[in-house]
Length: 107
Image (cartoon, rainbow, N blue to C red; front, side, top):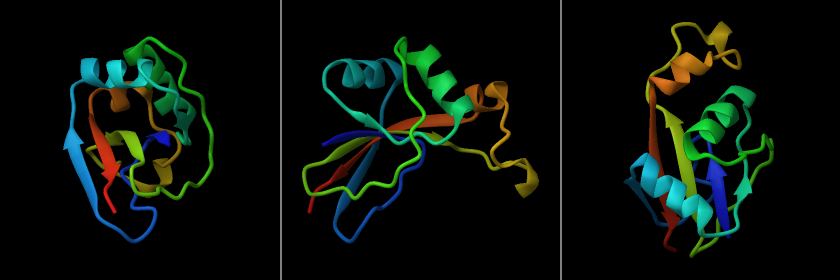
């Protein structure tokens, strides 16, 4: 299975690998396979949709990755100053504070 996540979560025991990728490589990854979104925030989904040129839906679900599964991870690299702001992050903040990686569950 292939997923799109907004955090590099370890969904269960096992061995994982996480590699940073460029926005272009991420767009190619998205366009070359069928995937399920688990992105939980509208602002994040909007920034991702704009960046990659395709619709990333909001879908607040939990997953459990199995060996061989991959996930494209769009992760904020800076914490908000206040926990009270969680869930109300501006698109501008997201655009200036993210990295993109591929998370592979190996075993």
